Structures are given as structure tokens and as C-alpha cells.
Amino acid sequence: MFTVPVLDIKSDPLDALLAVIGYRLSMLADSNDEDVKALFADRNVTIEFASKESDIARSFSFADGQFSQQGGHAKDADLTISFKDSMTGVKLLTKGSLPDFMTAVQEGNLSIEGDYSLMMWFNKLAKHIVPAIPEECKPYLQKAKPYAYKAQQFANHWVGVAKHKLGK
Image 1 (cartoon, rainbow, N blue to C red):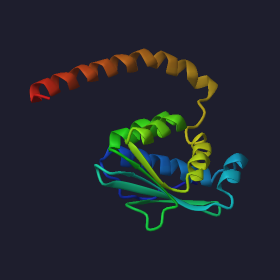
Image 2: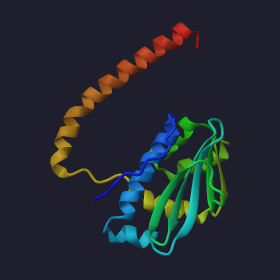
Image 3: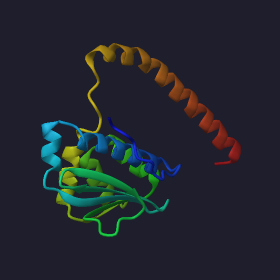
Image 4: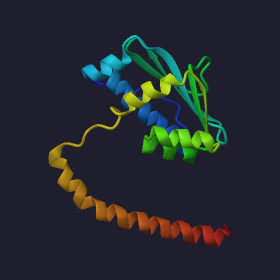
């Protein structure tokens, strides 16, 4: 049985997303998926994700098939990915596009320090983070999409009203 460890998660959107990614990586580390096991095997690395503006950091450690995550800065990260701000991190991580990461580096929205080859390795691992949607659930998701779109428009409208009222 999978148990979720108690972690110090800040209300920052990037930290919340990274904690969820960490939980999923924990599940993958305990899975029987041979592709994932091959990616985890013989890896002894720490990858830190951070936001400069929010002073948020979370590190993922991989050690011989085991996984752990820690809130805060890592002592010795093999790769550090620092986003300009939390929302930039959220947008880039949820897109999952390596070319977008490289564009963000060129634009100064992201800095990378350490072993760049770990970016390619983590990108391979990231393809396993979002589980496949079972075929029998897909029709329900299609039915829900128009409602999600309407809710998003409603939220955007009221955020715009709030910004206007606040003079932003």
C-alpha cells in the first residue's frame, strides 16, 4: 500500500505542483513498470527546482532506484533549475516541453546550473508522471470540457473585475 509522507508544502503554486510531482515520482519508484525501473536504476542524483522571486525550492533525490523529495534548497544538487518566478515554473512544468525550457533560458526566465544531461533524463522520466487516461473515462472528460471552459471564462472575467477595482 502506498502511503503519502507528510511534507512541508507552501501555498505557493510552484511548491504545490512540485510536491504533487514528487508524490507521483514516489509512486513510480514503487511501481513495477520496467521502463521506469530502468530510468531509476543506477541513478544517484539530486535535482533542485526553485523560484528566485518566491524563494521556493524543492529537491528530488534519486538513489539506486529509490526516490525522495525535500522542501528547501539541496546541499549538493547535481542540477538546479531556477525559474524567474513561480508562475513561470508552473507554466513550463505543466507544458513539459524541452524546447520551451531552452527558450525560457534564452529569455532570462530560467537558469540551469549543473549537469545538463540530467534535463534529458528527467524529461524521459516526466513522460511517466501523468498517468494514461483509461479509454472508458475519455467520453466523460469530453463531456466535461465545455463546462471547464465556461468556468475558466467566468474566473477570468472576475479576476479582470478584481484587477480593475484594485487599479491594476
